[in-house]
Image: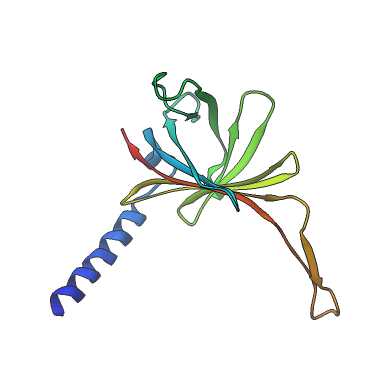
Length: 178
């Protein structure tokens, strides 16, 4: 029993040390690869290869290259290569942008040891999050309808209107440094 408690305490301590040592973007630099699983309500989950290559560029900027699909034509002939840039805006406040190099620039923030952002396109809003722990680089995208599914409350000053949204899909994965 004492040994189990000691092992649990050691594990918790190691997790805290690992979290404390994570810095953005320095801890994220590298070439990462893993499997992302895309889950849509009512459908079977689909899995696919994802790579995220983050390297220093110039003037404090970094590459932020996302590659979906396997580069082996025998297993998946389609590869979606997105060579973005990660650009600092106000690093003291954790503010960065991901420049898609096509006039689309997405604001993101380093907060609570996660690199996160929210953007909307084509009637969908997407929340993305990237974080590192002992397992690797975690990726999560939650997509929901931009228009509320339901609005309730709003019956008094003490009970404001509250909007809820339909979740359309969740993509999750863990990438390993190559």
